[in-house]
Amino acid sequence: MEPPRGSWLIRLIIFTTFSVIFVGVHGFDPRAYDAEGGKEATCDAVKRTVTLSRTAKGAISKSKDALVVENEETVTIQIRYIDINPTAEKTILMIHGWPGMWSTWAYQIGEFKNDFRLIVPNLRGFGNSTLPGNMRSSGTMQDLVSDMMCVLKHAGVDDVICMGHDWGSQICYEMGRARPDMTSAVVGVSIPYVPAARSFTPTTSYVKFIPRFMYQIFFDEQTTKAVAELDTDIRRSLRAIYRSLKVSTPDGFFKKRDTFLGPFGSKEVRFSLAEAGAMLSEQQILPIIYLTPEEEDYFVEQFEIQGFKSTLYFYATENRYQSWKFPHDQGNHTISLPVLTVNPSKDLLVNWKLVAFVLRSSKYIPNLTTETVPGDHYPHMESPEAFNTVVRTWMSKVGLFRSEPEEKTRAADEL
Image 1 (cartoon, one colour):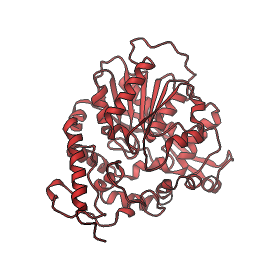
Image 2: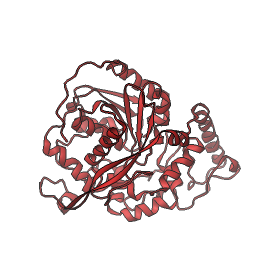
Image 3: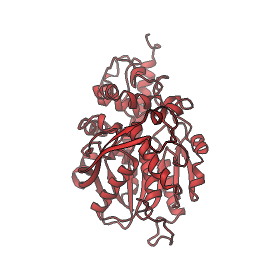
Image 4: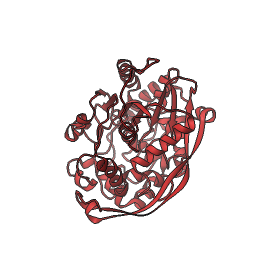
């Protein structure tokens, strides 16, 4: 179907306007930061082979024998991280989500680099950070927390404010729960705390209530097909995922069990400002409006190092089950630290405020502050000024800018 007359011009004006706004005030050079502050930590990691029962995969599992670890061995992996302002007294650890890289924290790096030391890693399997083995069983929340502990040890840091987005939020929440000896506060962006107090819920159960999580089943059940689709054109894949309230998204996006990018169509025509006179079809995907062209190029190059296969461990049922089982068996689900959860105003995926209410997240975080910032799934990138203001205000309120923080009682190390 031919798009309405003039629609290409409207989309071009929207893209150009907001790109100029973001690019004009930004000026972030990821290559310079990588060259100046890039470091690598050699970390011990567990390479394991597991078998998960059909019950755990297909229904809510209450069986303690649902997962069998067939083999475990310790191997070494490399975790790449950027170290900024290493002489600062206090440190923020910034953890990206999927599909992220350290550079997606550009606006927060610019905001906080003069006040804090910033440790900004690429998670295992992303960029130059390696994966220990099977992505289906060697990427639990506890594995990722262990990686972060290794990075902090390598950097000589023993206390951080953990700031995470998307899956990075879950890593920070788990750090706050299990490693309060190393964590002074948590900032979770877009995703609320998901306590493991209840029975394990496989993805197939909650897509009935959150239909836009169907893509997670595709990633889990048809991983090879998903990787092939995502890796065909990494730039196009990233552009599709890094959406915004200011750019329209096909209605079926995220809702398919047999494809991820299918709703965008199979035809790809690369778009640039030089092609301003070209008609834009529904198959075309605009550049990421809150990244400069140089940032997007760097982002794509980093993803091309390993592709998407090594990043999909978040969605594997085996990893999700192990991530749930560890804290569930421990029985302690409370995060006693100051926690800030920042919700986007209109996430295409789901209403996260409602999810937090259903999960009773606040029950397990006695010192919780919840704020909302305009944006889809990436409020720290879409509305960086509003986001940074919210974070700074909260930090001041809970005393994180003071040289000597208020004395607090920390729970015992649970790892």
